Every structure is written in structure tokens, then in C-alpha cells.
Amino acid sequence: MRLVRGLVETSGGEVLLTGSGDGSVKIWELGHGPGVAPTELFMLQNRDESVLSISVDGTFLYCGLSGGAINVWNLESRQIIKTISSHTGDVWAIDIIKGFILSGDSDGVVKVRIPNFQLTRCSECCLIHLEIQLSFRGAWNMDSS
Image (tube, rainbow, N blue to C red; front, top):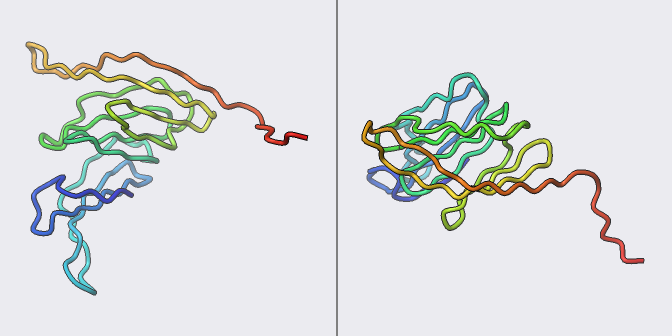
């Protein structure tokens, strides 16, 4: 789940994004006042892979999926603009920090990417990235004795 302000036009300005095991991401407008239930604004479908992590950067939604893929959505057009398939384990965590895509998987691998979205003549979006991979396998020993 991710609480986001100003992502889509709503009367209150706050929306909640939820990912689920059926591959869907739902965008909810939060209720105004006590006892008012959230209202589903729209849903995005990531095929059959479970959505394990989500992050938002501007109008882009990043979904970490079971099986190792990351889907990048344009929330204005509600279309997948890129699928990144570089993890071998399930993508448990994803975040966007100062333009860098950080993702971690169930194999203990953390990857850092520098994206560059460019519109081509055929109106497709491409992702050019430099990838740094860190692997945290085995136990960490913090004992100084």
C-alpha cells in the first residue's frame, strides 16, 4: 500500500494505491470524514503476477512483481510503458530516490538503475539504464568480540 497526495484529481487530493495477489493495482479515493469508505477510482492489471511492491514517481507507477519483473505504468494514459526483467527472485521492495530505481528481490539481490525515458518517433517509451547489483547472501556478523 502507498498513500499519495496529488496523484490524480480528487476532491481531497489523497489517494491510496494497493497491489494484490491477482496482479491488480487499485487506486482509491479516501473517504472524507469518519466512517466513509474509500471509493475505487480505477484499476490497473499486471497480467497474472502478484504485485508485491509499488512506488510512485510523478506520473509513473512502478510495480514489483512475483517472478522478478518490474512494470512501469504511465498513470495518465493508464498503460504499461516498460517491463524490466532483470531480477531472478520476486521483487519484494521498490523505491525511486532522486531518479534512481532501487529494487530488492527474494534472492537477496538489490539493484540500482538510472532510468532515462525518451519518446521515440513511434511514440514508444524506452528505458536506458545503468545497473548496479549488490548481493546480500549469507549472514552478517556485527559482533566485534
